[in-house]
Amino acid sequence: MKFSIRKQFALVFGFLMMGTILLCWFINNTFLERYYLDNKQKVMMNAYQIINTASNEGAIDSDAFDIEFQKICGKNNINIILLDAQTRTIKTSMNDYEVLSRQLLDYLFKKEQPFKTKMLANEPNYEMCIELDNRTQLEYIDMWGILDNGNLFLFRSPLEGIRESVSLANRFLAYVGVGSAIFSAFIILLVSRKITEPIMELTRISERMRHLDFDAKYTGNSKTEIALLGQNINELSEALETTISELKSANNELERDIEKKNKIDEMRKEFLSNVSHELKTPIALIQGYAEGLKEGINEDAESRDFYCEVIMDEASKMNDMVKKLLTLNQLEFGNDAVTVERFDITALIDNYLQSAAILCRQKEIRLQKAEYPSIYVWADEFMVEEVFGNYFSNAVNHVAGDKVIDVKLTLRENVVRVSVFNTGLPIPEESISHIWEKFYKVDKARTRKYGGSGVGLSIVKASMDAMNQKYGVTNYTNGVEFWFELDTSKENYK
Image (cartoon, rainbow, N blue to C red):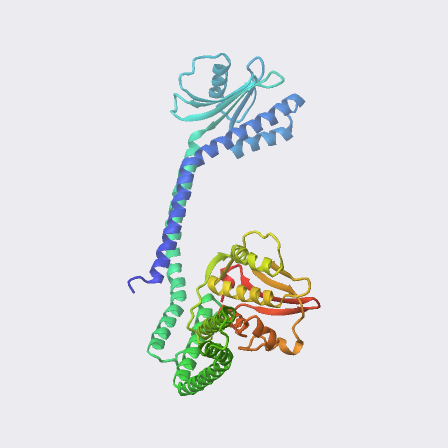
């Protein structure tokens, strides 16, 4: 394959390893000598403290110090010479100690040091510097000074040994790095092959599934993510096979469609029957009063005005009922699409109640509503306004007793509940389960009196069902509360 995962896997890890080795080599080559130099300074300072302590205690000539002295010189590659105040040699690590003695005396008497390259430390009792030897053309780290008891000392360690060690370490790292890279590349190819083989197997299975061959199954027994993917593909294969089998049995679905069509026809018949029944009374009234006007039963102007008002009132009720029936018909048959949008439910209710304030004052109703902050919900704004309007109109028409209507908004987890309470008689228990049905009226005489059609709560039910939201009614001893809920989070809207 042109874009093989195996090749990409090997290249990525190969470049990563080479980059790591090159970085280590660069750090070694740049900082290792400096590290060695700092470490050598610490070793010389430690040797100075040991020899100074032994000198103060008079243990320079002891056997124990001789052993310690040899360890310091041999372990750290340091040449040491100690002189007394008369420049006589007390102790040295070299047989040819005259060179060290002359160098120490040159330092003490401040002779010209044209080859001194770098000063490392300058303290009252000692100095430390990098010195270029004119005779050998080699650089040394020299530390010289006076011990607390007045004896003179010089420590010398060659820098070439440090540089050679650094060079050797870098060469060794380069050899090891190249060898490790080659070996690792071989291992990576083997490992990547083991990883990509099951992927290729899954590719072949998916190719067979594309041609509707669902007999191929992944048989790997590892516990890796690829095995989990293979298991999921096996389950997908079974699911697809089942789905195709179900599609071949589509005749059963056709029978359900026929049954649904019959049910819709029954709903239409019921709808027409109810509409005919509801329109019969206002049509009869309009016809009767219109005939009375035509025959001149009452010729005085006041009677004619009364007849005309009855006709207009009944026509208005019919018009209102027809509008509601059309709205309900669209909701029940799914012709009214739900438009989910984000809006402020508090502002919607406030605007509605502001327009209804005059009606409440005319009917001497005490409208109660607390101040609420903006509460944003996800729903169909037109449907929500229709639902709230039906609840509020219902409350206005049934309010009694103290004549109080109380509107509340209650926030819950990702939901706000809007409730409309009115004082008055509670709904009979046997009627609660029927109030959402079309044309159902608890008190038919009273409903007829204020022009109710028995469709408002059916519109509420259809609207809330269309938005997949909850609604309901709660009886109290002094009244009735209707409520509905809306999501405050879009993720909750299904």
